[in-house]
Length: 118
Length: 106
Image (tube, rainbow over all chains, first blue to last red; front, side):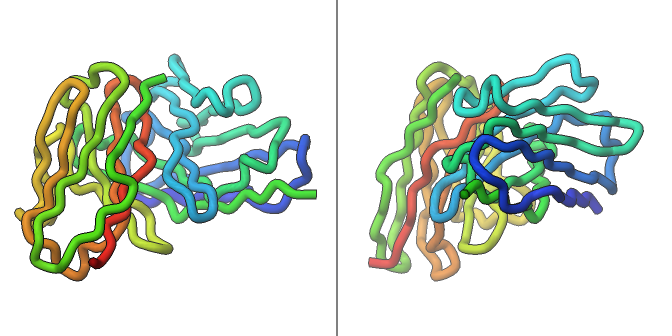
């Protein structure tokens, strides 16, 4: 069974940094690209960032480009999101997601809540 | 960045009626288009991938069509459990989601 467990969320002041983690199990982690998707309270889904299986390719939404960095450690079956220069509009539930939609599957974590406020 | 635009924002439908949701991509995404259903407090659930293939366990009343830049999700006869928010997603170039269509009870 695929499991994705996010951690690292919390309350942080504007301009500060936070690092999210996602622990993956139940599948061969380094076979798949991975993504971060967020959802602000009462709002829709927003793709944040993605990373290829071997970290050779990364992508970012325009809203976070230059402030967020995605990375992974295949030896630890873990995905990360380093978030710098945080803004109030970054407040959201952050989901870790496995890239298997092409095969007809969706795998999401339970999310970790990030609140940016003074 | 590929922009996905869904319409309408809200769709009011009576149980048993047909619902038609639209999604437009700012550039071609081929058939790399998925539809998700999300209910309050839950993670999204995949309904359709490859623009028209139902995911495992998804009832036949859900169908998808389209390719390139224009896509449609049709729910043939709405059941009570279908009232939710629906998102389209392109996965042709990384991911992008539409802003969602809320299907509410009329």
